[in-house]
Image 1 (cartoon, one colour):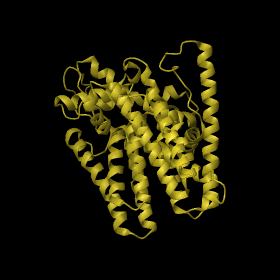
Image 2 (image 1 turned 90 degrees about the vertical axis):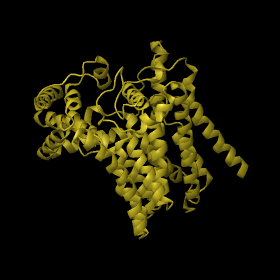
Image 3 (image 1 turned 90 degrees about the horizontal axis):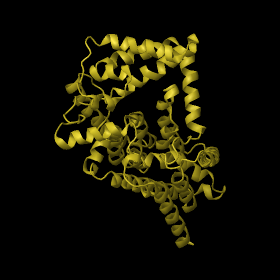
Image 4 (image 1 turned 60 degrees about the horizontal axis):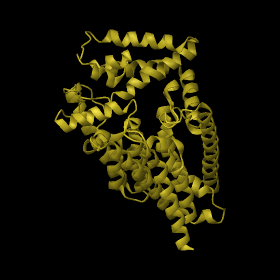
Amino acid sequence: MKFSRRAQLAAVVVLAFILRAMWLVRAGSDWAVGADSHLYLALARGLSVGCGFAPYAERCGAPELMRTPGYPVFLVPLLAHLRLAILIQAALGTLVCFIVARFAERRAGPIAGILAAMIVAVDVPTILNSKELITEALFQAVLTPAIFAALDGNPVLAGATLGMAAMIRPVAEVLVPLVAMPFVVKRNWRGAVAAMSVPILIICAWAIRNERVGGVFTLTVEGPMNLYLYTAPAAIARHDRVPLETVRLSFDRDAAARVAERQTRGDAQFEQLYGSDPTVSALETDPALSSFMLSRSVAVILAHPIDFTINTLDGFIKLAIEPYELQTGWQGLITNPRAFAAIKLVATAFQCGMLAVIWIGVFRALWRRPRDWERWILLGAALMLILPPALYANAISMRFRSPAIPFFAVLAGIGLLPTKSSGLR
């Protein structure tokens, strides 16, 4: 029977790899380069030619403060082999499945591990993230062991991997207090301090770099920008019952007015990396504008707390239960409208079923053992990863849910077991 369980887990892991690597049957790598990929690739080129952390497009651009360096560093040795980058991301997704399986197995036995791994293996947004040159696959592979290491009692590993995750995607910042909680519960104060100190040191080191090159002590200026672009205008639009686009235009004008004299880069390549949004262009010219964006956004939130809360809850619910809608049909490979419509329907139905399974499993796990603090920490990690993107109103993508899936999967794997089996730990 032991061999059978191992064989089942191996089959799930192989399935995870196939679902993430199958996109490589297409020739070339253009299909892997999305809108955000261009900037990551330009930053990786900047690192490789000696620009420091700045984009390179025929010449070095200004120091980058919007993105963090983790993913561009990952891309540096792969710039001439982008298909290999996708293959490595597929392997990282497979590794996450294995890590999730082993963690759930230690808590509730091999069946829980297999169930948890299967949930991660077939999660559609996670699969789609792996096939593009974006941060999510690497972020998930680094963040997941951070929380598991904390629950396993390894504060240095937990803190170091969480700090590395923040260098890949800044949303990991919100988990810094949570990574210390397992040690606080056990009254291991040294462990709690170590688990928090390591990521804080890593984050502060990069914030110091940003202060030196851009005059802003922050991990990234993207957070204030997103609040200014999406959260604050949506709250005003709901409160005043005016079109969102009208409010956005007003905010764009206010941001542009704060930049005394618009500096032009002179190269269209740099403009294309950041898109055509005037607010992004203003922030790109003057990173210190992020302070104004943050204060203005907070003022709007405080002035319209009910509208802000409604928008956030709406985004949170969407991220929790809404399936991801396929957009391109395998990057344009599927051109038949009927075939694409059928695939979208099947994918949506499958995701609805999987989301129902996840939430049923999560509620069962918490209901059976409501005093199990480990389960609440896992739930807290998942919800805290969903909450920040829930603030961004109409800019929400269901792909933002994928970093939380490993933690939901562990809880669901445990909760879906029969009652006797779920009490192993």
